[in-house]
Amino acid sequence: MNEAGYRFAMIITLAIGFWEGPMAIIFRVFTDKEPTLLTAANHLPSPWCYMAAVAATVAAFALIAVLDLRRKALLRDEPGSATTR
Image (tube, rainbow, N blue to C red; front, side, top):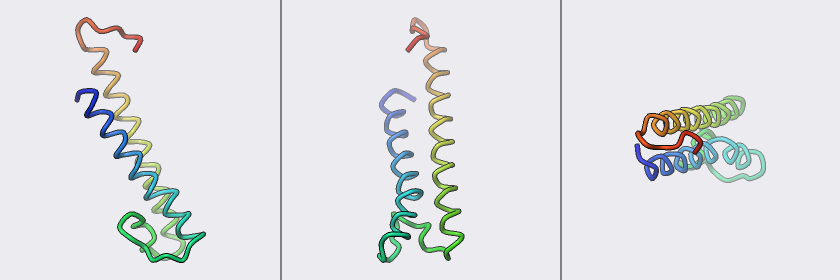
């Protein structure tokens, strides 16, 4: 995975994790809008929607951590690269 692919994956993961997590909870608590595709957790009944939103946020952060570890491993294995990037 090159640098552009890594950054693209990080941005997409962060955006999805943010919209399915904290923003779904904010829309559920502070607005009376109907659930949409961007806040899919809000289709669930009351206690489960919050758990789904937290699970989406945790999954996004876990994927970001894995992507970061993979990037660091690839940079370390790259010939002629500095390990202090």
